[in-house]
Image (cartoon, rainbow over all chains, first blue to last red; front, side, top):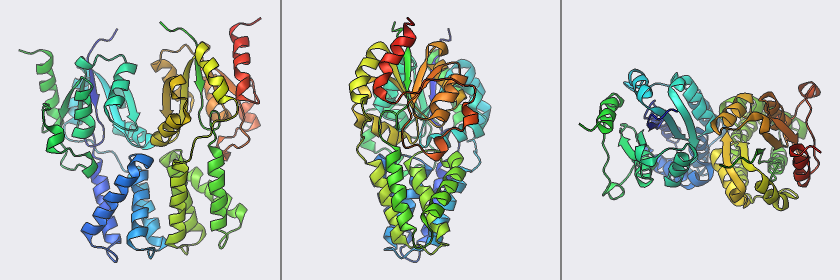
Length: 236
Length: 236
């Protein structure tokens, strides 16, 4: 019977780079739309489209590509041609085939974490793409279980904890997104550690009033995790 | 301790209509492409694109839409305009918001099945869309667990059985796809029941040589399940 505590880990922008690929593609998209709109107009229109679509299409690269195509047609008032649209599709393919770049200290730290914990990867997005990244990361053998979910909200965390027989009070989640990795876990009765990434999607940022009244540690770097977790486990 | 046997159920085209929406959209797509290609050319080109993309983009509506846009640009040699492409996107949205139509006898039979079994829904496709369909089906309360996976192959079934502590020899899977719901389950040591649907995607059909040497019951209708399962459980 393995009774080591379960440590939940977010994947994108916690273990490996992700948002940087979206930003780079968005930069290209702004250039593509330059004949019809300035950069801030394009960025705002794309974000509006993504926000409107996310409940229906979910997260991930395919949704992003569909939102770019939709925004391109709308911003150009239907004047954009097939060639620029096929370029958007090609960027999508590049994103879906991009190498996985681990964040600093992840490769050096994950083994230590996996010795003392059962590691539970919890990520949202496209099933196929998230699985590919897990495989390409070289980290798969360290994970006890992998959960790819449609949404990281409190009911989802409760469901995961229940299905895996995890005591919420012994569960710790680590991630770069306050709305997805921290607040819903606290709400479900667990603990959470925030490791901010310098690139965070607008739909993954929390306001001060969201955070108000909640306490959680904030680390600068994945490498600081073992020391913090040891302190939590063995309060001195 | 609930020791009822686990009955695995496929979702799309086993519990509710799915392929019909793809066929209807494909019919519109053939019309859209009529200025550039005849029906069989368009269908073959779309299937080629889907086959080339499936390993990267996975299954589901978003992948289908991306493949249609790609095929439209390629078949028209870049001459197609933004307006027809936005129509393709709109069809995608319609598919993602389509009502869920249960197949015959499902509503009447599922309660009986759920009394004698723990029902495990196993489906592949987009996480967000599959969850939406489960919720819209009105069947969610009958399921013991729900697994939405990237691929329904033997390793995936083994992983599911292992994670849920299911004895393969007591596991039965039911579905409309021989390559996804039957053969990999037999390979994993379980049993499987095929309920063909009259519409099946070309990438979900098995050849005679695939099936050769495997034995599994084939039912005409979901309503025939309880009698067959009772016979299996209590051999007379």
